[in-house]
Image (tube, rainbow, N blue to C red; front, top):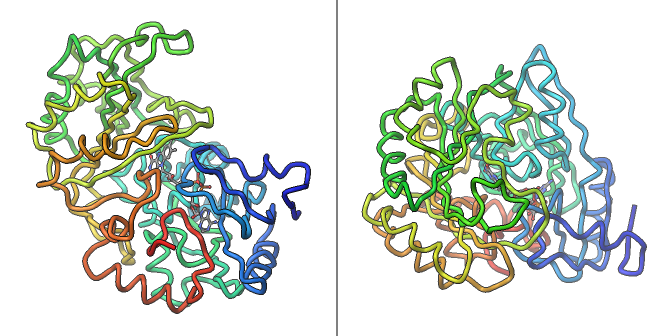
Length: 427
Ligand SMILES: Cc1cc2nc3c(=O)[nH]c(=O)nc-3n(C[C@H](O)[C@H](O)[C@H](O)COP(=O)(O)OP(=O)(O)OC[C@H]3O[C@@H](n4cnc5c(N)ncnc54)[C@H](O)[C@@H]3O)c2cc1C
């Protein structure tokens, strides 16, 4: 279906989860199949129009004004091969749709904290999931990718090993992916949930978590978020009006209760227990309503206790800041069987500062991240919401890989027709 600015349904089709700077295309192709994606890209190429793609709109950084938007939300099939333990995922499927298809077989994908995000974009950006320390990045477990390149040709990316390398970590810079085949894992349940601590009464919680992460096996993937909760009814009563440290836990195997004993203390809310993988959204319990948000991310070689101790003070200012730290390492640090473009596998923690709302918080975010400069080794594009400079995008990749990606970009998209959320070079 094609929609112009005058069509009914134009706004519905262009507006995704992130509302900061929505796309305002001349033409929307709301696609339901790979041939329709080909048609849309060919149209854009023939008319010299830039092409943006949107699945659920969680990762939008800068709206495309004019040009073509390929809206993939209704192109969302998921085919599970139970014997091979794989799934074929179409362009617009969210992790929710993938999990719903795999859970009846006790199988799980390498999805992340919020199942509402698009599975394809998450994976093209690397994909740091709930079981990341045990199994690695989602992109490490992709077997096949079908992509329409900027010339409108549909290709099996594996026919060009360089393209297959680049797509897994290099994001939406090389074409419109129509589907991917991913590996699934036998994980019917997890031991997981969150421990919520009142920071005012438990100022040592960050340091306790930091020390604990140094002792845990790869079966434990965890994170901590500092969240100033507003004092309003939709917020659970024990959290209202408090500055909370939320320890988010996803543990494989039977040893969960023993493993988390050092963390227990006196949380104001404890949601940890055995839960079906299909309910894994309860671990982070992130908000489900569309809105505006900006963030900056850094990948760290280590978690320095000194700047860590100063983080809580940043939530007391006039702008709300959610500061999230994810524990990396484990399988994330090991090279995958088929190399890909993911950078900085040696990072041991990821630190993101996020502010909801429209305000320009770039100075505040830079101030919060500045004390981490000596241990910063790069950034994750998946956790960067908002436009980045070319140098900032380059910092997501290992030395040499950025130039390799640009070379491939020159081959597959010489006219820079594609408008991805994190372009390798700023337009
Ligand atoms: C609440 C929340 C939780 C998150 N949790 C995690 C997490 O646990 N781990 C993690 O790694 N990331 C996480 N992310 C980041 C998320 O993976 C990225 O923002 C991702 O880009 C979202 O994809 P989308 O399809 O939902 O967004 P969209 O805005 O629809 O897509 C983002 C960009 O991806 C590109 N793209 C989309 N579809 C295609 C396609 N078919 N072919 C080529 N390019 C395409 C386009 O450039 C597009 O601008 C989270 C984000 C949010 C908002």
